[in-house]
Length: 117
Image 1 (tube, rainbow, N blue to C red):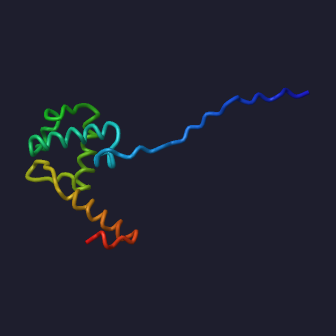
Image 2: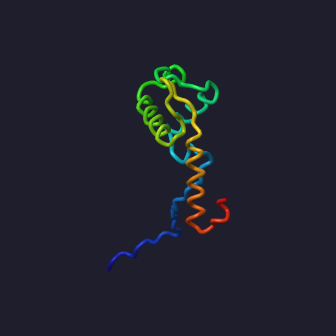
């Protein structure tokens, strides 16, 4: 005679949820790269410019974090958050302009044209 199957008294299900990002940086970065991006932005807000070769001393980056730093810089340059000027990185308004255009495109897409102008 077969054994009776054991059925658990309760079942736990894990449902993935996504918490909305608190900052614009969280849209593009996560984990260690988010920390580095925050350091870069804070440094640039305070000092206006970051020389390309002083990132190790200025931001306290060493070891394998160098690779992540260059990934962050490339992504920030591509998004328009920063720009390159005579060997330095500086904060840029291009990202904000791109996000405004994206918001207008979305309003147009959903049919709320009167809110655009």
